[in-house]
Length: 437
Image (tube, one colour):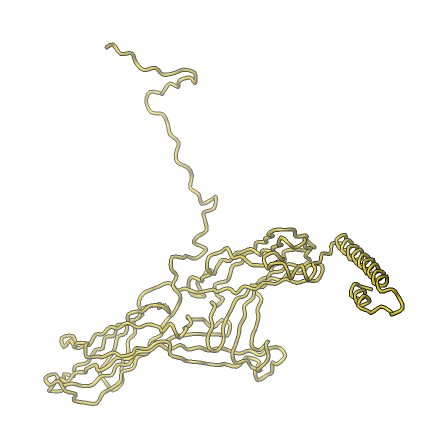
């Protein structure tokens, strides 16, 4: 019998033949006695649980407590932003360190945990899985590392309890990205469990970037069939998603000396656009793997992430002495398109970029400012390497302090030259010379 049963008994109506006051007093005394019995039973159960190392909190206690006063599991990052310096073949990776914090709030009783684990995994997600509706086909999870912080039950009292961890990301791993066909993400997952059976968890995504060192400018030479034209295109070795970069084009052979009027090409318009090429391989899970789809299904997507609005070629002048036209313009990536940096094909995802330049030209008479022939389109395509800016950061291997054997010897010792200096005793004082004046 519990308190609710006693309350139900109290709610009944007394019989007509008995004194109403005495009946209600008797029921009230019974109610107090049963309530006392229930309280003693609850106190005995709580004492037994504490003696056995089992701790519980009432629902009302947890409901009234603030979130900061209850038990909480969190992850604290100590290392700087994760950046791969260099391409996957030469990168030394990224050093990562942090702390796993288990906080016991002010209004929470001590907890005895039996499990405390941290897992680092890479998530490969595809928008077009082999089997629609299958979460394992849509997302592949590969575990990189894990940490088991306890091997036996541990009592945690009031305050913060921290467990450090570290990991070196290999340089050949891809950077974080999110494309229209899929993406690559890194996730830290922490799980804890106490002796009562309550579980605690915390997840934190990690954004790892890659930066490529700038080098010499890329120079490309193009020849156009059925014409005497050649073009020389110069672009930077590495460009960045934010900001603009210069592009220089030299068109050689624009003057036709064989014709009596010495016709030359005139640039009417300049167009350019930047394309992003994404290729992803959707692998099936073990349940839906078959002979025809064992190697996965390849999906491709191409989109424009930057283009010029209008560029008039009339401002580019002809150099008759060198028989060429030189022009330069600024190209940039549209930040609203949410472009992705280059990703090598290491986990089934590859991202590349290209710059397409189109010159619309027409023949013009040297002496008469009029077109003397149909317009032609000169199209050039150049690859672009897009990466994040490195800023002032350097690779972790260049920040390591020197070890003991690398420290040079100390300064050389000093030797006495000439008359040795007489040392004065500690009790002797120097007095100034007497004055004769």
